[in-house]
Image (cartoon, rainbow, N blue to C red; front, side, top):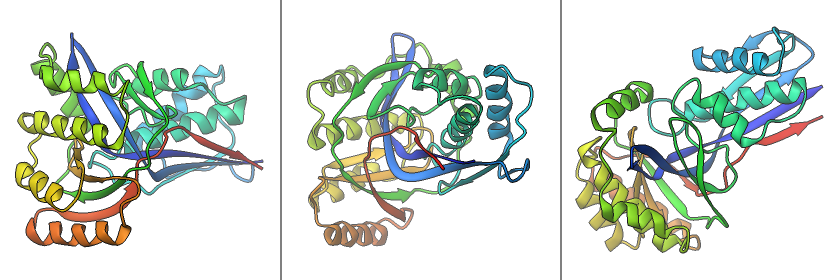
Length: 287
């Protein structure tokens, strides 16, 4: 048996905040993945960090077993500490690989419960783009179809410990609602999930997050990007990544040229990669 599970990462979030004491995020899945591979040829466990090992242990217990005798390897295209859902992708890849190898794949709600039991979780394992409670994994709303917007990704520098960030923020700001303008904008996504409205909401959320995790020269970057034809920006609200958002049919050459201009004009913005907004969810292959 050979079993492969792919889970996408993200370019930050389209939006993130609090409403009536409940945290929420709107996911921004992209085509970079964590990959878990199960094989009968060995019993070795390779590439698993502390959180992935916790996912292995918890999933084995959830499935009613005490041991996982098969081989399990984990690898990822996602850097950590940047706000790209690297930990979530690793955790969920292990959860689904172990569950599927033992019996059958889990539904997203089961995955969410297991993942959130380890750390605050991104919702990239839900199909489509979703709004969810990142502390519990509970689904709030789902948005489909997903426009394949182009995202030019930049790293603004440094690393952020997501677990510590969410713990501190929840303790100090958990009773504060996000700005009403942002909450209204997030609500509008259920009726208008166009690239233009997605970018509008994402830009509002990026601005609102400045008091939490500041992105240097954000307003100047927004103004410059829009002047060059971008729709707006999005950020990793608890990370260092920033995305410049373009319509799906924008010229890739133009996007790359603008990215070079941004990197030259704003030296702290290190170009990372250009990806597209995709539908989330796990890819499971067996042979």
